[in-house]
Image 1 (cartoon, rainbow, N blue to C red):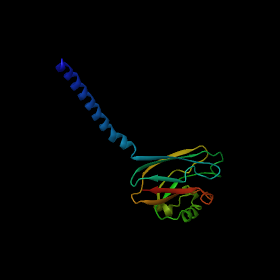
Image 2: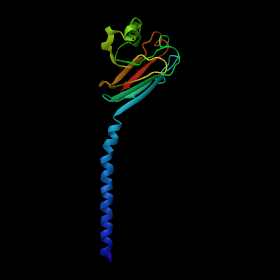
Image 3: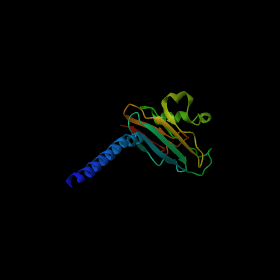
Image 4: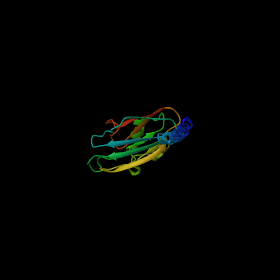
Length: 161
């Protein structure tokens, strides 16, 4: 009788061992999903982003969504999200942007200072961008380049760890 019990116990052990292997194989897929970072920004008629600090890993895939939740016309209250390279002075950049209405307030002469940016959005509009986070750790400024928005506090920092 003991021999008859041994077979079901062995079969059960093999079945459990096989399930454990499936769980381990699924772990890398879950890790791959967390390899990217996603942030949902909103901006409104009070000239504020809902987020002023975000953190990412060096070289990580990043998705930024921006929605203008305001109600004012685009000519009076538009928003964008512009990530500047490390060391770029945000105020100097937006001061130059004031004269760049034709290029959605991103000065063509300073385009090499930009890592990524959304479109300039009117009320109830959204845009989404994806980019690779910089590989150099540190702080990178993001700004809204629409006139006067930076001075009203519409900027923040992306921290690369």
